[in-house]
Structure formats: C-alpha cells, structure tokens
Length: 119
Image 1 (spheres, rainbow, N blue to C red):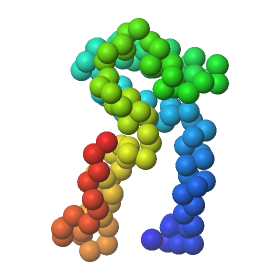
Image 2 (image 1 turned 90 degrees about the vertical axis):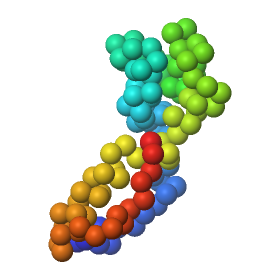
Image 3 (image 1 turned 60 degrees about the horizontal axis):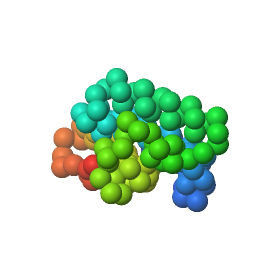
C-alpha cells in the first residue's frame, strides 16, 4: 500500500496518454482475436504493417486496419472499434492482482476481491 500512498488518479490524463498511442497499446488484444481467424503469422504481419503506417502517416490504427484487404470481412460490425478501445482491455491485470492479493500479508486465500474483466 505504501507504493500507492498519495497517488492521485486523473482519468482525463490517463485517457489523453492512451490516445497518444493511437490505439497501438491494444495490438496484442487484436492479434489474439485475429490469430485463430487468419493465422498467427498473417495477423502479426498485418498488425506490424498497420502500426508502421499509422506511426509514419500519423493516422489512427483503426483506419489503416480497416483498409487492409487481408482483414476485409474478418471483423463483425463494431468489433474492431471495441477491440481498439483500451478502456475495455485489462490484459492480465485481473489475474496479476488476484495473485498479489493471495500472496500478500495474511495469505489472501479468501474470496476473490477484484472483478474479472474480460478483455
């Protein structure tokens, strides 16, 4: 708890920092969804190419991914926008918090204290 003592959460700054990445912070999530649909190698190639173009051209990753012929009809309506939203993606945060709570002072073998968020 000492580490978080005095910490001020500023959601507006967090969102601004996430926006600076142009959604590239969630490419791991997109790769995980794409791999079973188009193959891991193709998914990686598409994401690498799209990320480089997004950075080089200063364009959002969503627009570039939407233009790739390899990804035509791969996503359901609204799916890509949802995958690109970092607010819905927590990665491995839930299991990591659970593990930390279990191994913290007192053992933490009690009931789960953090919600499980899919993502």
